Amino acid sequence: MGYAQEASALNRQAYLEWEAEQPDKHEYIAGEVFAMVGVRRAHALASGAIYAKLREHVKGSRCNAFMSDMKLFVAAADAYFYPDVMVTCDERDRRAELAIEHPKLIVEVLSNSTAAYDRGAKFAAYRKLADLQEYLIVDVDQRRLELYRREADHWLMFDSEAGGPALQLESIELALSPDEAFEDLDD
Image 1 (cartoon, rainbow, N blue to C red):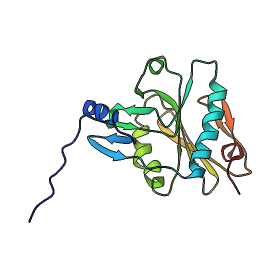
Image 2: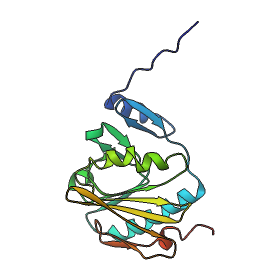
Image 3: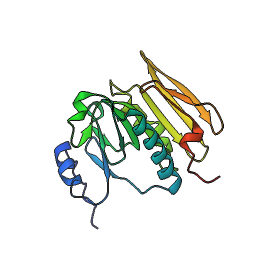
Image 4: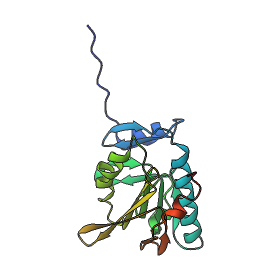
């Protein structure tokens, strides 16, 4: 009887070289690689609406907004992620070609297969980013925004549902309402 051969872990450099030649995106966590799956229409519309609002807001400033094609490197977690949307105002990130390392704001749009991970292990990794001020979770099924804001040595959570008040993204001085985030979705 044959046994499956254990795959050897990739180091970061090998991952980056391999990933550059792949047709699909893959996240990297401590030597393991995970394929990114396609998203539902509602996910794409919500992340697109949020990106457009953030990009317009930071236009002309020293900040940049990125969609899910730009990697995020979290050194303390030895990981590369593809957040749905992120904003950085750090001068070091302005020179980055492959990955951002100092975002102020990260946005993840939940899907059925990633909701627990986005709220759990991924958020735990994101919290290791010293420059991260806010983490916005977007639940398209519930039409709900959950904003986590760093305050000294802890995180505060704010939320709002469809028809509810805007959440203040203090990291970039912008108010974002659920209705704006979900404006392109069918009822």
